Image (cartoon, rainbow, N blue to C red; front, side, top):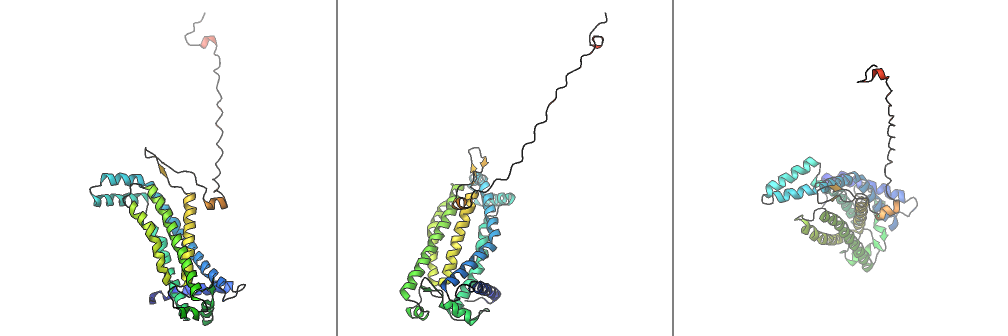
Length: 316
């Protein structure tokens, strides 16, 4: 179902796709599956770079929440019999500490309109409709593109006749689609697992820890719903998951979780040797200014006074 008030966004996404595809068409055939795969991947990367500041804001908020975790635990114990008061005190602590518990939703909310727009534009291509500023030539080019033998506009539950009309074999198409959905499910699980492990280590007494672990195993099942999506949209989703997994790993390896000792003192460990750290090297530490030399102390030797001026002396 197309939302009329988002037509401007559909048109914008279609225009970006058109420009990226035209750029790759200068050295790759326009109807090539490689051309369209690179077009979708490039669009995904551009979108993720656009919301990268939101990701950094989310991670900074998460780090502040980690630093406030010991105080949150104290409030949970103090007001364990009064949940309303406990929630009020926890929210007040977050506000005073500059932490936003909803900060993790920002990247998801920001990319959701793009996902809806991609879904709408790719569905229009699959239905052979040249809308949102797309030309008939561009639509035909996308419908003729095959990625590893599967049409870009095909869905897993399409009938054999529909898939054959796109110039592909039904069995091969379903195998390719199932493989991409499996990759999407696996990357979703790894991304959630990475986040849950850090959250549980941060707050082992969190009553929501068990629910988070359950979510970790349930979340990959949502990827099964993507069997109703076109291959182009599944490719977009796989690229998004891979980017999120790598981006999260990069941040966690360079910003280890603060450690709280028995006395409540917070220390931050050294960055770990993650995959990206091994590839690009550890971040160079800021040069430390050389300590200023200590001022040289010159002892003033007292001058010897004449015997007549010494205290307590008597003139002979």
